[in-house]
Structure formats: C-alpha cells, structure tokens
Length: 234
Image (cartoon, rainbow, N blue to C red; front, side, top):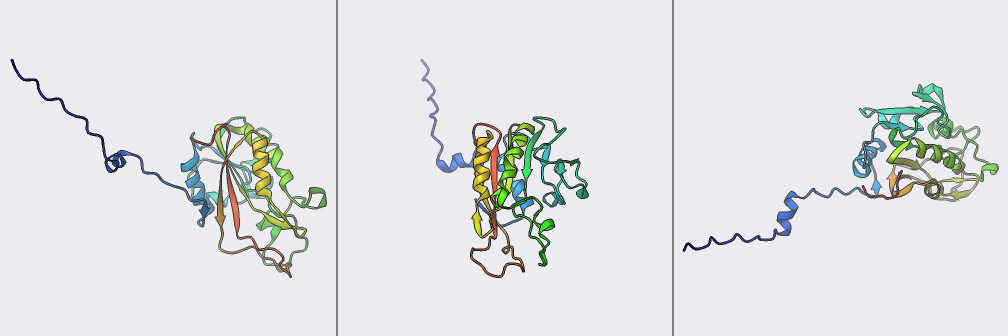
C-alpha cells in the first residue's frame, strides 16, 4: 500500500508580499501649489469613474487651462472674442445635448466691476469682473450658480464630474464666502459634493485702488469636486 503524498499547506502571504501585487495608493493632497492645468489632470485621474472626455469648459475665456493639452475640450464662453466653439450663456446652454459630457469645468467671475480701475491689472479682463455685483446682488456673484448648476447637471453624463474653481473675496468691505454658497447650491441641485482642494498662487491679488487693508489678501482659491451621482467613491 503506497503512502499518501503529503498535502501542500497554504501559507498566508506576509503584508510585504501582499503589497508587491497590490496597486500602490496614490494620494492627492488637499493643498495644491502647482498649475491649474496640472491639477485638472490629477483630478481626472483621481476622481473620474467614467471617461472624462469630451470635456465642457463652460467658462473658456482664453483657454489657459488647456495650453498644450491634447484633451477633447468643447469651449463655451459668452464673449465671442475668444472664438469658443459655443458662444453662449452657461446658465442656459441652448442647443447643448443632454448627458453628453464626462466633465464640466467651471471658473466663474469672482469679483464685481471695479469702476475706473487704474491699477496694472484690468479687472474686467483679468478677473472677469463684468457681472453685476452690487447691493441688488447682496455684493456677491453667487446668484450665477443655481441656473448654471441646473444646466451642468443636465449636460453631464451619469457619474460625470463637475470641477469648479471658486474664489472668496471681500466686496463692499464684507467678506463673502461663495465657495460655501457653491457647495450648498450644488447639493441642492442634486450633485454629490465630494471634495475640496485649496489651490495656492504665488501672491495675493492687489490693486492701486486699495489704500487700506482690513482683511487678509487672498492668495488661495478652491477647486470643488462634485459628482453627478449619489456617492463620491468610484
């Protein structure tokens, strides 16, 4: 009678052995000091659960986010001087097909018109300071968000991303917090607000019109990540 061959024992893998085959965790910092274009690419990689293209840039302007990019970007701007593919108001998006984009990018104006500004910066061009932002608007531009959010939700594919660059400012000597307004309004519009990244620039915005400082000068803005779905996780 032949002896039975000994059975091979299953030896559990060590933690180090398991990590060899496991995908390496690639964190994304909540503070970003590089360019917007590089951050956009990182957000595409980190958050997207569906194909990101085509991308709608709903506030295209001169298209600085996409310099050197090979991404398939559909440009929209209300100002025809920038030759966008779609000349139109992002609060209406007339003629834009529903559920047609993997990502919508939004960089709205964040300061109101500065009158006869004599500084080296032209606020109407450099900061998009062209929309009413007076007492009738409670000295804020947050009233622009709800109609845009309704349209962004319509044109995004299910689980597509809305990436919004929002800057807090001081208007009429009062601090305004549009990034808080945007997150609340996005939630009310049916988005899941997933994350917030602080983007730091080299120096604060200044103007020759500002003679006395009562508030810290902002040198940061926020990128707010929203998903057109019910959960944040991919």
